[in-house]
Length: 121
Length: 343
Image (cartoon, rainbow over all chains, first blue to last red; front, side, top):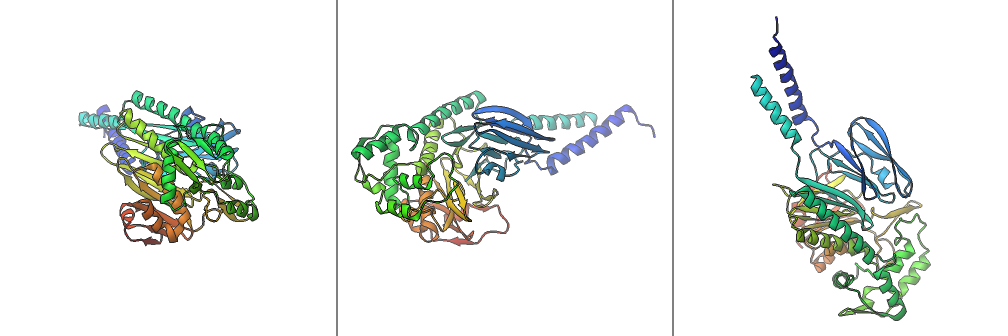
């Protein structure tokens, strides 16, 4: 069977549409896409949550190490006493915030469908 | 067909690119992390409002700090030396509200126990690592009975009959600051927002066509215990034993001290309150944590609180029926629940 260029284009677009609909309707729409990293009161960076990498952020106590791993982020290490930020573990959903208060470093996940608009604690 | 598909694609792309009118900022201020979310305003308007709040919070932090040089330390020193002082205007409303809340709580919320907090090391910005103070030292301080009941306020003049008091408004100031921040947002014309200071929050308006949705953190672990929708003007505040604490020889020592025993409150691990005044909710959450599973109901009634959720050390959730009607649990299996009478 011979396909014309237009037929192939239609098929490619149809397959892409299925993929897009799958991602939209069945994917985890709550997952955030970017993370805002704050050092002190200044936004240090707005970075993608994709891939795997470590980011080092300097604060008044020393260097906090953030780890990004395919859509999620955590404090891998921080020079604070109680390590609350490290114990908080991975964050991946839009609206989640993890902070190291003593070292004044925070990460806030942007994008995705917010499950909660704010967390009370 | 091709045109139709292209149309769908463009619609999907546009949908994907549509930006929600939500502006969010985090600020390290007020001794904590403050999160501000503003919905439905131009970015420039929202950014200006956040700048104003950042300044306000810095001023409040300086004015109300009980241990860094400033108006409150100065007031405490005057009370210590002369047992009488003029309350500066930036502290007067906080003092007036605290006196009323102290009375209503039956003394379970007591901002005059600064010396006790200092003995435990919880006055410091960085939580202590232990060990706890010697029991003899706690009992010696307790025997001198420092309470806000020793303080009289007439107009703007405060007198103390007890030289052992030291005012530390830490258990009410965060809530009061959130109230003031929301007042400021409203004055700036912001109609839909949430202000969260270290977990204490107040909402205005809604998020578009739905109410603001709030998750309440589980007192053990970082999961969400429950969620609820907040109406405009409502505050949700929790006091818990997990916020500032240290462990020494297997025992947890947290920062909410029971003014009656001089030791960290026992019995409850968290107390969550909904109220229209964040200052009242803040003081009430502290008082209810101190009151514990046996006395929370009477304390809530005395303080005029209508929504309470208290988690005890066994993990049982104590609630009044009105709170239970609003709470949606986010944990599986459900915790054991004990309902009180209506408040």
